[in-house]
Amino acid sequence: MSTVKRKILYDDLIRQIRQFIAGTILFNQKIADQAGFRLTDVQCMNVLELLGPSTPKKLAEHTGLTTGGVTVMLDRLEKAGYVRRAPHPTDRRSILVSVNPKKVKAIHAQYDQVNRSTVALFSEFPEQELEAAAKFLARLNAVRIERGPL
Image (cartoon, rainbow, N blue to C red; front, side, top):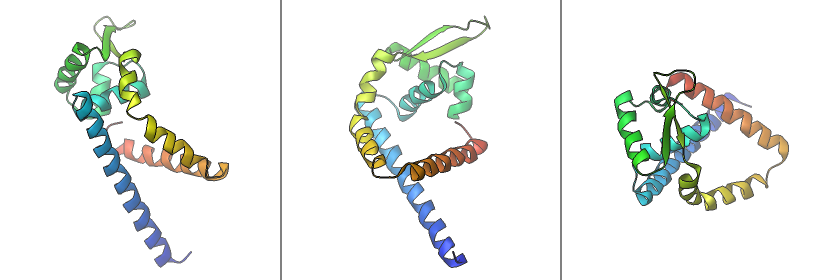
């Protein structure tokens, strides 16, 4: 592949990634608005589901929020019943935060249609291309993680 063609492909990939990220953020904001939350609240629940039970400090590291900001957010989410705080089993000075799966189910329902459409799209691609896409996204996430939260 020529250098010029490769440059055009790189530019297109960057543009597609930017468009995907922007669309995802706006969609997530819509979900947060409908649920009466802030965007960071919904993303905190997502981070908790990805990481599993976590300390507020770990949540701060993965969200880019201050520990004080995480505390305020967790107060809001706990009051609404979406997260639970429990004593840390190995560190009595700390707590672990986890999502309440029953409450989060309502948030997940908002993503059902887009998830079904995504799975339908996956079915159009051969396994080798899906493996390449998964590898690409994993490496892209690794690069992004080096630069900041989650």
